[in-house]
Picture 1: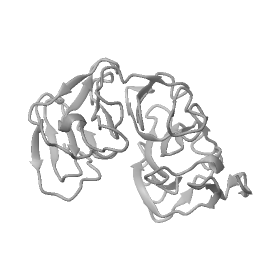
Picture 2: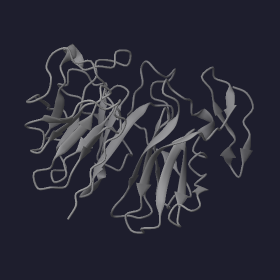
Picture 3: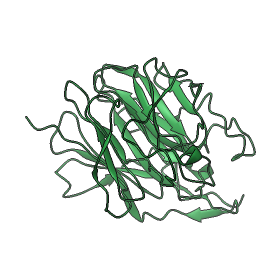
Picture 4: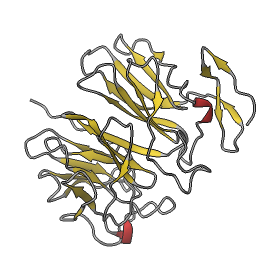
Length: 295
């Protein structure tokens, strides 16, 4: 596997596509997450996968290097690179942070970022890893949490929709009756912590909805039992993709749900997914959708 270089316990290299060791290169920012308690603090997830924090309103940044100390030498990019794309801050515990990395897995800190550990127990990657139950190396596409239940996490993985009821210590599959358990985003209803949304994609090689029908799937039971939401969405000849950051919910009483497509459409449902309409149809590929509810 080649030499492994370290400084302060942090690897200076990670695995490359061919299994050799490759220097870290911080090329672009994938996600930013503001602190829940301090307006001057913000976190940034970057590619190659690393986590940075600013405590002065983004004037200066410092890496939290302990994350790459969590077996970072074994992390290896997937087809889309190796990016830290999800940051979740526990609203009840300022020391606890979750991050998701493609293609390394999910990691948690309980000491405000000093040390980290992989939390991938129960994940299986039958087609992507030599050891399908390895501690690191899983291609996690997105994770989500409801503020009222910070121990419950939902995950859309490269294959499989997963759930954890113990802060990521273990995961179980909740794909149930979905037509495909491949996809990118996953979202939780603003007021119903057991109501979750996914958008199935046909496969990892064919990035469009099964049968060319654009369907959002909703589970009101935290997984396993899913219903297709189609009212107002195209049900033939639809060959778009919905990327990991392109789905969001608002905090209004009726809980609006929003998503964008690689075809340039943005769809909204103002009633938790029961009815949909396109609010724009001629954008470039939509990479990210964020919603703010103004008082």
